[in-house]
Every structure is written in C-alpha cells, then in structure tokens.
Length: 316
Image (cartoon, rainbow, N blue to C red; front, side, top):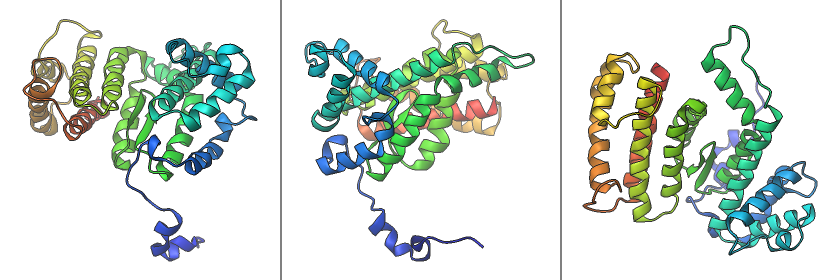
C-alpha cells in the first residue's frame, strides 16, 4: 500500500500548488522569482558553496572574453574570491539574459574542466571495449557538470524558463519526452571525443537558434544538417573526409551496415534526407536563400535530425 500525496488524491489542486506558465525567458522573471531560484541553487552559487574556485574561474573567463564590457567590475579591480562571488551575484540579478547565460556557460565549462582534472588518470581496463572506456571517461569528466545541469534544469522547469542545459550548451525547452528520450541520450552518446566535429556543429546549431533571429534560425539549420553529415562521415570513414551529398553518405552507410537497412531507414530516413537537403538549400545559410528560416522550421529540423541520429545510434 503506497501513501498518496494530497495532490494525488485531488488532482485539481496541482496547478494551484505547482503552477505552470507559458515558457518564458530569463528577462521575464521578477526579482523575487530570481531570489527563489538563487536559493534553490545555493549549493552551487551560495557563499557557503564548495564551488568557489568554479565561480571565480567563470568570472575570470567572462571578463577575459568581454574585456570592453568587463561585467565583473569588482573582480577586475581586485581579483579575490569574495569579489568574484559578489560579481557573480550582481550578474545573476541585474544583468540581462545574454550576459547571465554567458556566465552560466562559463560556469559549466569550469565544472567540466574540474571533472577532467579530477579524473585525468583514467585508463582503459583489461577487456574493456574502446566504446565502453570512452563512455566511462565522458561520464567521469562530466560528473560535476551533470549534477549542476540536473539541478538547474529542474529549477528552470518549475519556473517555466524556456531553456534546458545539456553537455553541448543550452537547447530550447520543449516537450519533456523529446528532451529526455531524444536529446539527452544522443548528446550523451556523442560525448565521445571521436564525434568532436559532430558536437561542434550541433553546439553551433543550438547557439544560433538561441539568438532568436531569422538569420540565426537559418544558420541553425545549416549547422544541424552539417552535424548529420559529420556523423555519417565519421561512422563510415572514421574521420571527416571529402564532401558528399547526404543521400550518398546515407547509401554508403547502409551498404556498409553502419546504419540498419530496415523499413524505417529505407522509407522514413530517406524522406527526411530530402527534407533536410531542400530546407538547407531554401532556408539555410550555406546557399543564397529564397527566404530566412523561422523558429518553427528551425526547431522542426533540429528535432528531426536528433531523431535521425537517435535511430542510427540505437541501431548501431
């Protein structure tokens, strides 16, 4: 017999105690909401946090990469832990979304570096496959980041913030099933260094999408399709090689059993390849455009490509 929460016995109260809003950006939040988020993230950002060096490193990176703006002004004058924490707090509450997200991105990079430093002496064990070793190493490198991302994403979901943090950066928040069953497994699998070029293209696609500009959506499509080309080249040749059309790469991958030659691949994936090629030609930035893309089309292409990659990975 399982104890039930009040909200489980009376579902109509769920929206009252756990309200859902339309997705919003960071700049839409009131200061009181940001204060709540700060408290929920105090394990990582608070004065008693064990991540002081990570905070300082992220502040240092932000200033170094944005010298003209020098957002961390206290730290610029006097490079102390206390000033780094003070600037981090100020940026969190008072800077705009772009500056805040850039800071969180540097914080995330610092956590990945922390994991890499702690686990630099990881070696392949006897009888361990190369793929198994690479997966284990990627998990170790990302242990601090993954812990932070899980917490941040949970808090962001409760406040209906329109972003989701992954190992490749921020992606658009959408239906949880798409994020949890497609994006996260694919991005985790691609953490293998062998797929660096795929990661680079996907990361750039996410970044361009998040600019929220028509030109950014077109660039997003171009990089997303390029990530698929890179993936196919790597599983076929083991590296990026001569440029071939998607259809030729797909045929070669299926003929060499790198991708399953099943009904789904033959019918659905083949149709998707035509859509990708046409969309990149018409709306991407790799060719003269008939028109810029829009958010809906860019998101659709991203989702389809992630599903495409998921099928290839699961069947591989």
